[in-house]
Image 1 (spheres, helix red, strand yellow):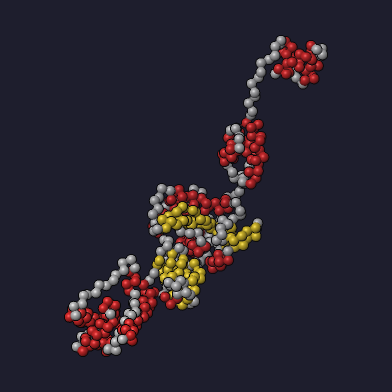
Image 2: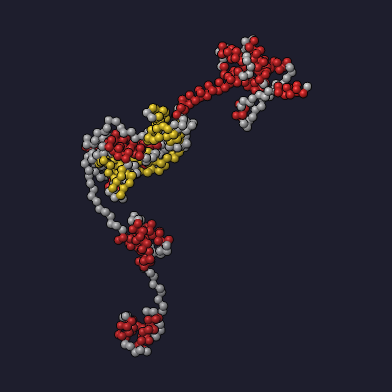
Length: 494
């Protein structure tokens, strides 16, 4: 009872002379409350404000919670608790969970179905983080296929989840099982399903071609119905806990070797938790029911058209691969398998390399540039030969003498042209004429003749100019200036 109620009761009784029963009826209170108010000559002490209950504290957030659950039914109570606490909710987590419980959809019940031997398999990817491959970081994935009847398991680790790797893992799994199941369950992977609207499914055309080659039917699960491929989901959990947990992964290829040993020596010979039998034992009944493998495996290579740069290099998967130089600037066909990259010019084979999974590497073959280097050498030889013949008419006979002497003609011609750059063409031409008379063929003879003649005239040895900051400029050929023009000018004045 508060002061307002106490004063109202006393006023109605003392002033308006209303009976206690009438006061109780008018105010909607018990007659005992009326008697206590009339017996008290002082107003009652003020009551402490009543603490709101948890449901009252939550009342302001019910619309928000209902909208969030309608959009995201899988949101946890703790996640929603953190969200509304940021909006001022002062209640507890238990109150929130009690409120959410009737709002959540009831778990769907389903029957556990056992399939016939050889009838079904289930496939899925598992993301396993990153792995270092040389200078690169690659995303590591685990492909898992489980035969539904025997629970026989196949796993393989890859560095991508592209369609070609997906199909390649299928081929390896079929070869491991020694046959093909008639139907395979998948999640709605982009490698399998391009788009889906209800029951209208558009499959990836190349994957359908692959399925047609191996005569199995791909069956995508319904949306958000992971239990439809629960066998492979359980297998992935088993791989994570029994194989990957605590394992130091240093090499992708080494990891696949360890996975093959583990699946043969542990995974497929354990007592399965559901069947209470070893998968290997049940597989003896299932293997004879599998479809026969085709005579020729499906080509799961990455196939695409690529352009060749002017340096005869092709960019693929963050690396560059060389091809023979005549293909520079052309369009080739690339075929990349797991460990090899091939190039074709139409039906004609062009080049092959071991596939590199690092990044920003140049993988080249020196033989691809052999023709180019040979052509450049011929061009350089012709250029030096022409410059040498321009020194003097006797140079033709001197070249013939060098050839007859069975020396490296190009090397001697280059050294003689270096002498021409140092001493001038006139001195070199005179030395060639002198050496030709005595049948002295070689750059060394020419240099000694020049040095002897200059010493007789008391001329100092010229110092070559070396450009250290621009070393390429030292090899530039500069046309020598004809100074006789100045002599002619002076003769005209005289």
